[in-house]
Length: 456
Image (cartoon, helix red, strand yellow):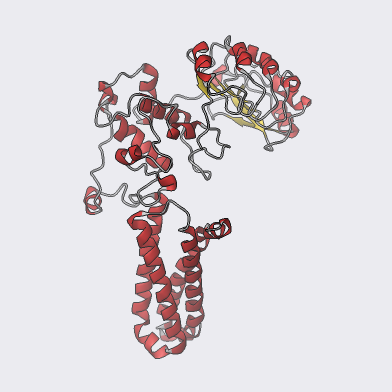
């Protein structure tokens, strides 16, 4: 099927609301027209049924084009298609009766309205299964309803970390929440189903997506750790991605050998991972990102000046004076004067996003010491090894993104070894090859280096 037809098919999700609204409106008008007070509405019904029938045909046509994309399979997909076609054909019949056989329509109109409302409800239900997964409606239903729907009994909330099951209590809910809408038994994008461990282990169209004991070699892990701007980043299409903590847990689970049907107490879990597990399970409150008294409150006039010059300045939380700063217009080059303002805000700047800001080594050097900066994104700029000298004074830097700076080499990264707080570096799109990564990681113990070959 051509790309243009697939493009048209995507509009199915836009127009599908038209026949739903039309059949509901038409049914209401039909029931009102049965009253002697509103008999004049009978004249409008053929027009309304015509709009219902035409919108249903359009929706079905676009839906069939949308089905031309790979990834739609299973009972819900087939049922959605069949019920949708049946509803459209029935709408044509009712339209015909309302125009050419008014007597027969008036006799059976109420029953036909009820039948079409039932059909569109069932069609929508199966369509919702494709969008949200087959268990979406009954996820929080009473056990009697879940049992009727063929679902297992909901797992009891975890009260003790030691008794938690790594797959059933942590990883599975996480993947269902973030990935389940596109990777379920009825909608398998890339022929991948993440609804169960068995399905996950089958893999997708390119083979296995998790390799036991090897997170960095697992395609699933690679995709969730790519920059969000990368075409292979998952989840796609603007859906909410995994949090940094959830990515960490996914990597831990894979490296631990994909444990399931066991408990955390049976595994070797370090304190950091135990803390992440506790937070994910809701066993302990997530710590505040920052503490207000650790940062100075910037003068309002300075913040107004930064905003006027092109910076987006946001507080990290209501409890903190710490700031997250980025360029207001994505892709706008940062001027020397803009960068100089950052030095005046250095006592409060915890996160700084300079991605695609047109930086080179000279402009980066305008930024001097950043004593409290923890996260720095320098992606897609023209920085070389020489420019990394500027970062030597960023003593609290924890996360550094160098994605897309093609002139950076392993030799330049040696300058960062003095940063004792540095814990994570992103290196996709630099001159550091995949073959050089093992030795680079060995030279930077304790630092997580992401830069493996991109998924194909």
